[in-house]
Length: 197
Image (cartoon, rainbow, N blue to C red; front, side, top):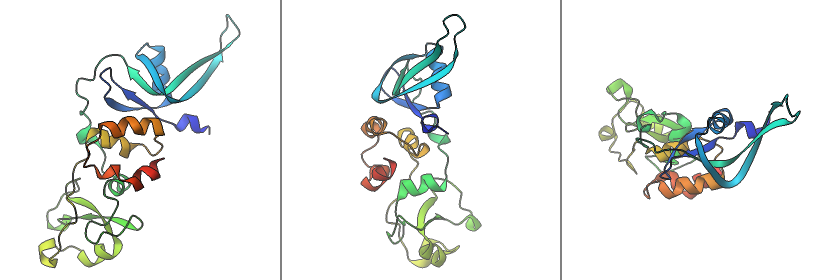
């Protein structure tokens, strides 16, 4: 399958705030419906359709990697609660074991307060953990082991969520996202940015 068809295009509203990713089908539909004000970026993708009966020419739409949609998003942070907690996203957020600092290879998901002890499967109660520490911790609480967290888990912002949702972020798209992400973001760590490129 053509890799262009797997590439997501970054949608931003008229204020310059990244809002969501568009598949190529969604982007073409937005273009046809006149919902795109303009596009920019270092990459351009051309999508070809059928043959026009009147002209005999193949229909063609070219779109840039970053698309400015008409209008303003009412709430650019609307998706904050819908950022899925997956192991891949969790490991990108944390990058190292929350207990010993090892990583990024061989990480597992750990529940700080174990599920068996009433903990929840949530961004605030989950962290990346090496398999060694996970085995030692088991279903015990940190106080029972005398352990402390190396960093505090957090719910990713909407813009961090955009990075977590796409494995194939283009360099021009990443520059837009980096500009609006919180400076404390663990996702901005150099190793993550290298992995995403």
